Length: 321
Image 1: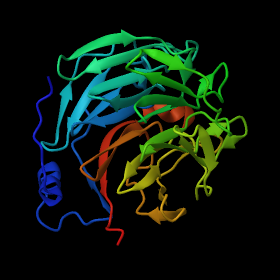
Image 2: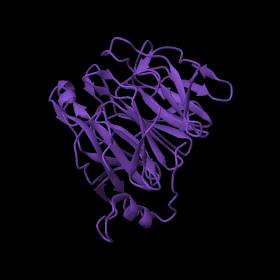
Image 3: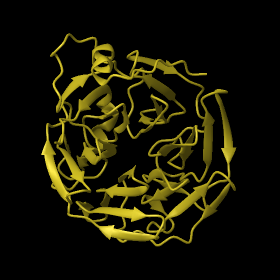
Image 4: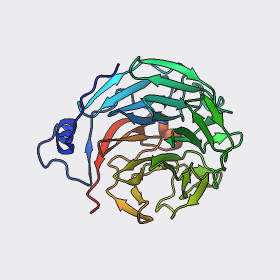
């Protein structure tokens, strides 16, 4: 069972998390957190009850079963029971007190695309297996909205299909309207029971396509394009906006530190303070208004294996009014 301390005052949280004196962190800027115990790329992260959970990953050994949790209130990491199957390029989200992990690629390279669904209970510390996805899927994104878990994008037999899992029935639904733009190495974040899908890449390279899905009406809406095209990025809902950062350009061997935020209220993008460490295959989650960006690799493509990161960098947005 994960022990945690709840911090109700954001300023206090910042001092505790980073051990900084008053004024050492300014709103709208980045700060360092305690590094993750395991350096790894192509990971997935989610937050539940003030704790950030990071699963899987890719190293020279292939896919990992590694499962670690970060407690921002104490600035500490915990090593948790490993997920039963090794995986990288997987997806994770939280719903109703449990952690859900789907798909990804197996231990050896990219030859095996997994369809499994695993559920972690933080109270018991146990993994259980739920109904597998309708097919294998890797480099996809996942988010929870309207009481269900939605899987979008990725490498799959029918990559444009949208699948949802209902924990109440244990069943998958494949009848949703397909995503308009096929993409993998994408990222998704839920806000106000809608799912925002940002960037990614396909056969012709990186995309700057941004879309939002409304499960209640089963409709997709194209949003203003992202300022930067990128795949291998991370996205999260922070302060009522969708923040994106990181990514890679395979052809040029570059990793990105550009940090941009989309405001659904105004329909506009804003360019913000860049991520201190450019990387791809990273993950992120938000706790108490602070966005934590974790792991990845500072080198693109084949350089991933020699540039694995365990960085934790945290961003506190500036007030929007």
